[in-house]
Length: 151
Image 1 (tube, rainbow, N blue to C red):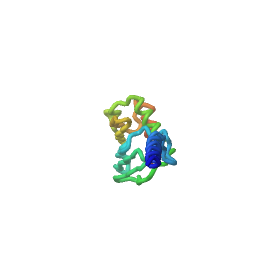
Image 2: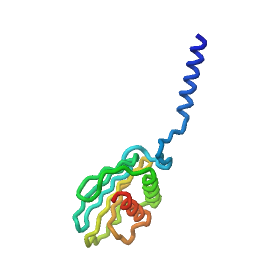
Image 3: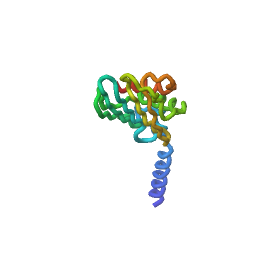
Image 4: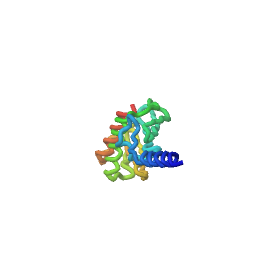
């Protein structure tokens, strides 16, 4: 009877210690883990000479879903790509972006970009156009990063 009690106590201690372990999935950067599960970015790009209208949805797992008319595709971002994206998203969040950078004059076949960013439980939607003069560098960098990762 005592042997069974000791074994049971040993198993319970091991279970308790396992709950304290810092578990990181192999191949996943720990820098990505502070992001909540689910969709972290919904990015829509509309316009251009080709009449594009496409949307990418990016989940915290790195899964990318593409819909619409354009050259985008579904894909899986690597841990390094996710680290790059999360850094660009966090920089944009720190820049205290306005909701819109759309000027009065929207002339000339530019792309309109709508980004819905969800980080740390907060969601913000930002709209801009290509080549807007007052666009913050952090937003420009995010758009360049997305262009590199999604095309």
